[in-house]
Image (cartoon, rainbow, N blue to C red; front, side, top):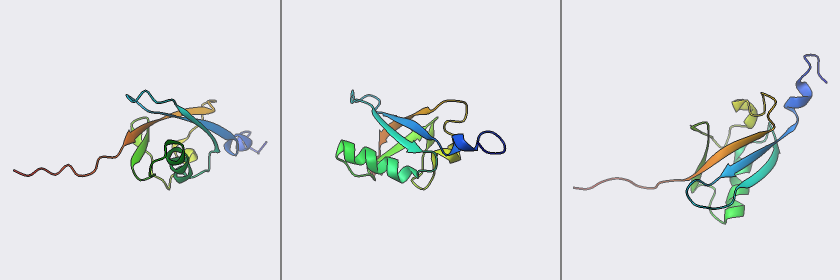
Length: 99
């Protein structure tokens, strides 16, 4: 345990559950360290779903999670929770309108 009493918890693992709203697909649970970049989470989800890691975004608490960010940056697991839930959204390409 560290000097302030919670350093060991920062290095601990958390479980991230990815939900697929509206698709009826099963959730994916991933265990990782709080310092693991979200790029690894994106890659794990992409591999599990057989899609490109660039074809979707993950959101937590209505915030888009960047691939270079980490769970620790968003304070995952801070309030004695060791599990967080992310939402999966397919990326929209295009959207321009011609008249």
